[in-house]
Image 1 (cartoon, rainbow, N blue to C red):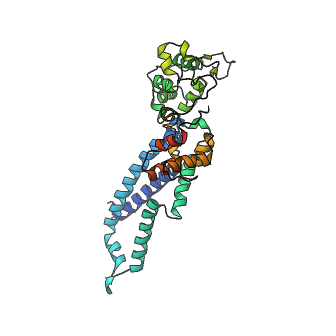
Image 2: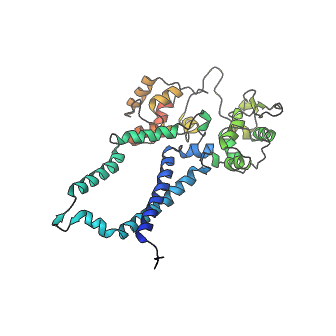
Image 3: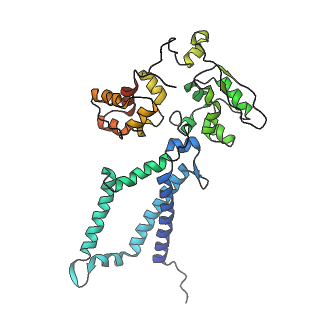
Length: 329
């Protein structure tokens, strides 16, 4: 008679194999996926799925693999026990194999925590893989989770005149409510938040712009005309536009401006050399500033690493570097 019952061991093996396969695929993709702020800002997708989707798949298939593994062990418990014991010997069997497996497992666990070679190279490759998606400076959002801000809040934070932004976006066929988030507006019009930002980016920092009609078939963008003099503006607009430096005097960073310009821009992952180069700082002078405040930071140290060693926050280290330095546009 044919046995129509479930083959427990076969089912356990196949379930473990399938869950391991999907978990491995999602794990590899999460290894190379861009940082969260970049993925959301650029609406990153792989096979039509977002980073959030792949993260969810990885969690659920990892749970499936855990349960399948436990079930597999239960179905094959006798065989597993025989790996460690021998009927001919009263002692433990496969001692070398057991010891080597345990040591190797511990090496991978603690090697990840303390970044022991060669595992530190794998972790460095992970960072490099995530950074490779940034092919344009606009792929870095101007602030953390910028796509979740309403258009009104986003414009206010970047000193963009909302009325002018509305004109530019409307001329590109984009209709929206000022209380809608950038992510929702972009989704409703089949584009990414970063593309939406690129359309109104020329308006950033000033409310005096000229909006000219674009030739047929071309994308309409804003063009900067002249800076607005704060004194000639209504009170509400004075509050929205950064204070201008006196004629002939260059504006310098204050603690407030450092927060405003750099917070939420992923500065924590940038090295001292990168920060100095991007902001026109003399590297030797930057090191002297840090040393004077007893902050140990090498050229290749990231802002986050230096802050961790100093028991401080990354933006506090950034303030040491930037306060008093001229603001470069």
